[in-house]
Image 1 (cartoon, helix red, strand yellow):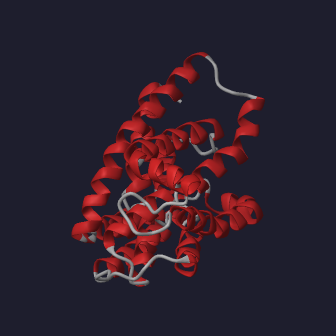
Image 2 (tube, helix red, strand yellow):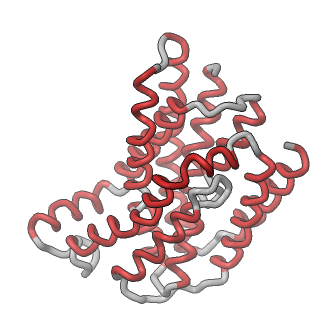
Image 3 (cartoon, helix red, strand yellow):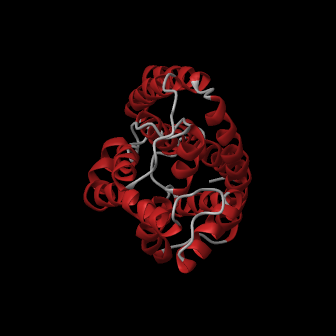
Length: 264
């Protein structure tokens, strides 16, 4: 992988992890365009780690509030929700994705990796999800364990390349009557356990034959691009969810999916 390819793919990963267009789907399409037909575990781990770091930076105050509130049995600093309950809901929301990742990871990878046309079909499904989310008003239903688990089921569905994780989880939260701002915050915070879990699953394979020299430099550039673009995209997406301006992403996913199916 060349430096410029790593930078472009890192930018794609960072932007699409938080924008509702499927980061895994776009990475597959990007690799297909560059002619990389095999999975690069090292690059995947590096850019996902950079993306997780961007989440920690953007939500550092919320995370700090969760940590201090958890140990001191207090509510969140900007919410009446108990910190310990919120942490429990984040863990609960990760259970469905963890179950599918541990049991169906291999078959799913063999079904979609190297098949950009199938990824394109799922991007069209994402377009439908976003079209629905655009029309859901959001309300003021409280977040609880049951709702967190249902949002986690939506996240598990997004393990398929082409299904947007943020689009699915935010849409599910809005469908359950949760406010737009809380839907965005919970969606982004609940991404941390699956991202870190996927890294742990892949880190063993990476350590067996990590990159050196030119490859290491390329991956470092890709990680930096993923971190910077992920930080910008995360902040941008929060504003978009508040304004419910998701229609443009539905149109984009539909067009990208059709083009992938037709030409890739």
